[in-house]
Amino acid sequence: MRRPVGATTHAAIEAAIARLLNAADGKPLTIAQLAAEAGLSRATLYRAPTLVEKFRVAARQCDVVRTPQNSDRVHVLEAEVSILRCRENDEIRELRVINRNMAQHIQALSLLVRDREREVKRLQLELSECGRVVPLTADVLG
Image 1 (cartoon, rainbow, N blue to C red):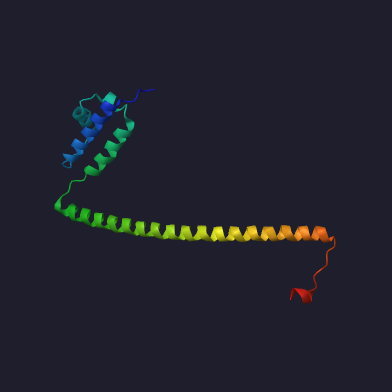
Image 2 (cartoon, helix red, strand yellow):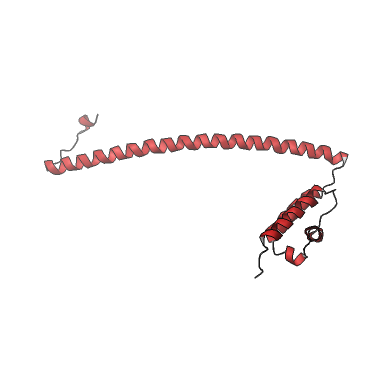
């Protein structure tokens, strides 16, 4: 098993990722570039797999060259993402309200069940003390 990188190396990789992403000009970013920027070998870099994956994901996002044609499309998509996030937040808020209401209903029903159980126990005790059961007739049941 590979030994994970230390805190200093981790910080160097994080800083290199930030520098490369900030300087990205639409050309593909590579692991070799990241290793060179961090001043590390690729072998050392691969001992930080979460950072390598983070870099790969970010690099894929930077691969799109923003030309005037696709720049407009990017703005439209960013606006759509913003709208979807707002809808998602609204939906989450609504679901939290529903969840809170359901919790209140459950609590109320739990109290009713507890009261019914007490009533059943009381009636069982009364029945055991009385010793006889009188059947209910249809006219009593209403």
